Length: 450
Image (cartoon, rainbow, N blue to C red; front, side, top):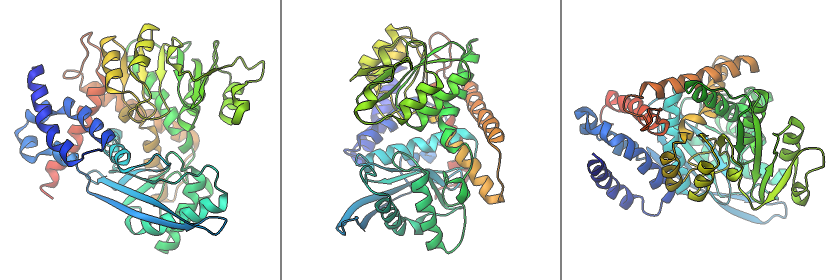
């Protein structure tokens, strides 16, 4: 069986690698899905004949554009922007915009591909897209960010809209940037509409959007624990990052009685041996510069220079920073330290070698396309509110988010017969890929050859 899967994978990936040469992150994402779903496709003459997976690996279109704008000194600046409209099989294109010097087309193609499976798992009518620019907001004035946003939207406006493509925020694009982008779109479209999510509340945004991914991650982790007869209370949780996902995952976990023992940044890790307090959490999120490495006495924190959180012997690991942040040595540290569960708050944060080691060690892993779907889920709910000119309460949204995350867990549980570990536990990685693939495959078949 293993030889057959290896052969199928090699035959499938060879032309993909040739066609997308150099797109390392995208190829990694496709291979991870392909090794799980190729046997499902080959078992169906209908799926095989329609070449479903091969079609799902190709974006509908990629919009590539130049952004030209003036900085505060009057100098002309030039950046590159993209929007990868991956698939609208299930609904309008949906996915974030990322502004960072590290953004390139390979990263956006991988994120858009992952988004297709993630959005399918939510059960909401959402297609998949991703976009961004190689622009860095750090060190830029508010006026410069506003001018860049206007120039960016001047190129993107013709390609988006409430029933066409609905971008959201991502790294480097928060509610301030979304506010600028949305108003620029309104000016181009000459009408108001829910063409973006993650908007400020005063511009038609939804409560809970900032909290959604982190809160949803914890809701999904609770569902995994319940499946295994355990609770979140008193569990030691190591979290990486300190952005919105990490911050709100920590906040929700603390509220539910867990002991969050870490947050992290590029320079190192903040460690709370006895667990973060809300006060310590707020200090870390707000800290900057050299002072961030010297926590005030009384917060119960120490800063571990150049360290990652994975050697702190957690029960649960929640990587919430960026792709490929958990490497093989980190996986060994987690397994040796007694970690039993890992749920991904970031997209593809675990390398292939690290994932294989954790699998061999019996660590239950939940992939980002399931575990961090809370952000796009609440974005979908914001689209519903905009379409009906309604405003939901935070309590209603959190309850709806919890239901969606539990429903995703239920969909993965349905795949248990074909997706389980040697110990009999649900193989959440494979189950997420298979469940997302089935939903998309049925839509491919229903839509014909277009």
